[in-house]
Image (tube, rainbow, N blue to C red; front, side):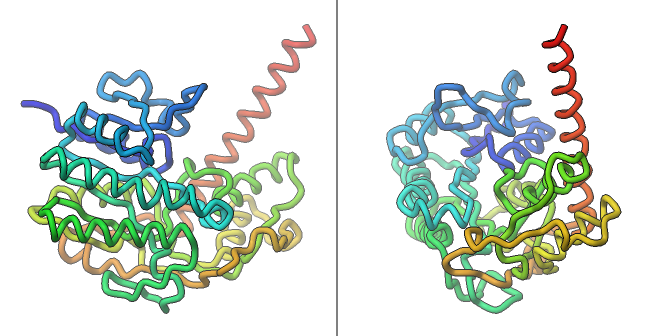
Amino acid sequence: MKKKCALITGISGMDGSHLADYLLKKDYYIYGMIRRNATRELGNAKHLEFNPNVDIVEGDITDMSSVMRIIQRTRPHEIYSLAAMSHVHTSFEQPISTMLIDLLGPIHILESVKLLGYTSRIFQASTSELWGKTPPPQNEGSRMRPCSPYAIAKMGAHEMFKLYRDSYNLYACCGITNNHESHRRGPLFVTRKISLAVANIIAGKQDKIILGNITAKRDWGWAPEYVEAFHLMLQQPDPKDYVIATGKMYSVEDFIREAFRCVDISNWEDYVEFDRFFLRPAEVEELQGDASLIKEELGWEATVGFEELVERMVAHDLELVDHNINEFKKEEKNASN
């Protein structure tokens, strides 16, 4: 029997790499799309480079011809549209590139599948940022009030997926994902910034964490189990959009406190400084997803709680920092010999 084939855009990111790991366990053949660059940087997908069931393909999500060429070559059963400029603060500084990647990119996928006449099932990673200032808890029917270029681009892609589904009978669906994290999260995102800083403080390499709004509240889940929901959504007879969330909300301050608790530090305030630079021009204070629909209809439910999530990230970064220090000492020793 022929293996199922999946195309993952943004495979080098957190979600893309976790999804690839999950699909490999299900005996998929995977095409992972990355941007062409001089160093062929694979990021979180580095461990997949020599896997016989993974083919890393270079392309440009903002170039329609590039996207169509890759889809035509790979003829995937499933496409996971995960490539994105996903840092909200950066989207205010780079609104045009955010629109090109986060809005045009998904449209290029939809249009390619439509023009090629393929039956590929397409998943789009939407975001809880679509809700903006709509009071929590938010569900599939909640009003969208985006408050950043990132959220506006994602809302456009979200609506285009619904349009192509209804107008062209494509199997296209969106997972409205609330914040989800893991040790593969980039260091510029607040959760990983905190967990890495705590590890560096313990190692004596850092004195303070510099942050912006720590009163903002989010619904944080564990990324590896969120990608299971992505896959589950594409296995249904008909495409449908779902909220993916834990249903519980915690502040950035809660995350800081819990991260320092993991290393037995209670006076966390002594290690945190405020900087206006990290404030968004338009702040979103509270996002909390209502994932009752996906639980009821598909049986998916988040199982990793907030405290366990933070503990896992801090434990990983403690090991990472310790490893880096040991490697540095080894290099110093070799250099002196």
